[in-house]
Length: 440
Image (cartoon, rainbow, N blue to C red):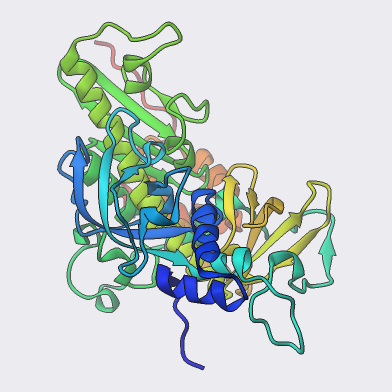
């Protein structure tokens, strides 16, 4: 049997649904209902954009995924061109993934449905004689081994996507070919190497997309931080987990300067009276931050995380149906059909509505050697020191411990700390004690 693509056109999905014994018109409407209810994930190629749009970012000719497309809540079979696999009318850009003030209408050249979702929602059958033609998640055999609590080497979902979706160090340029990663267009991203990008590479993408004066990605805390400098308004920043930045502007997990758009545009009373050009500039800045965050998180980090799970380099565990159920390992293909509801707590649901709680991930690799741990610590600390040259040795040691790096005291003091400082362009040994304050 040849390779079966993960995505399929409307006509192919329709044939498979009809093969289960459903009449054509009913099968079409069933597909529409499932897509409108977000039970089946979609992706589409943008042929034309209308509206305020993306402020210069290349959109036409790129492939956008379901979370970025605002699928109509009421979808009829007459709304789709089934032969050419596309909507007849343009669909709205999802305001959750960009600024709600600035959203566009997209004419889609084609749309495709995620094959596993179609199977699970509309073609589900039971398993017979070891052959699976279409099986719901609830019918999949699960490993008998269960755990009451997460194991020591498991990572919560929010940390795992940073750990397994980002390369520990710089990638080999010989394997990637010419051109820096930030030179890739969004259309080229799905064709890029399976090797995840490094923290530095992803931060550079974020900085170029947002024009921030500085960007920091902290894999330990799981946050993106954007720092801006304005000649007339001073410094400002947006910091938080990527899923919080992509969520509501006022999300408590997102820390922002009072001058930023969340406060500059709205408050509990209504519209804040600021200069129109300031409000427009702030809205564009927030829009750029959210677009860049969506690009890096969804197109780079999540895809690398998904590939690691599909290749069984990473195992997924969860409590199924109940928050108090034992933890159990999930089949790798189940992860691909889950929709994450809360990255912070690790909660998701499948197309049938079954809930998964306390999702964790773990590497299948053997424990890393001390030398490899020290090498990883040196690279990570060098990045940290470039962003914060005043970081003390004690603070750096605590940061390494929080990151799960198992270092000996002597190894950290004699090798990791001096080499990390050298990698950041600093003297290997810092001057003892705190810097004296200037008398002037």
